[in-house]
Image 1 (cartoon, rainbow, N blue to C red):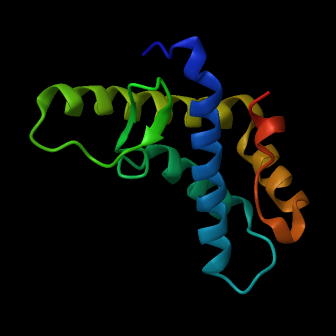
Image 2 (image 1 turned 120 degrees about the horizontal axis):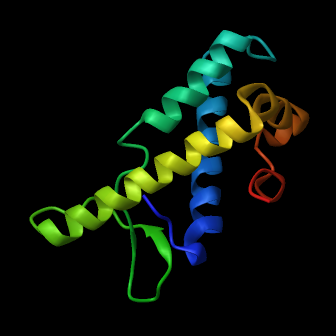
Image 3 (image 1 turned 90 degrees about the vertical axis):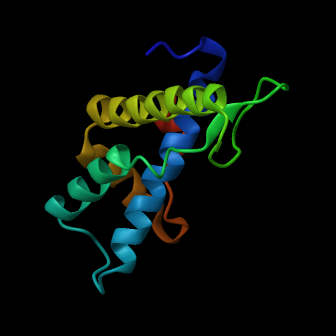
Length: 124
């Protein structure tokens, strides 16, 4: 699916936000300070495949991509949100393929107590 150029950066920011959340959640489930490779790889890939995580996004009249909640009973809106869900999942997977799960984890771990991926660096 083609992502309009004007929305690529925002799509990347959304995807990186969800990847950050996945790593935080995985860390919160353990007493360890670091995740082993199998755990962070599974968490990152599961995030990109999670339909619910990327559902409910749409571009409004202001031309801004935002999370608006799931459209119900409006087939046109449902189809548009389905397109955006697929686009966001594609960007998420693209980030992992381009950078690699190990590098994504290293960037997250390097943030220390902030526990977040550097959006500018990942989405550059």
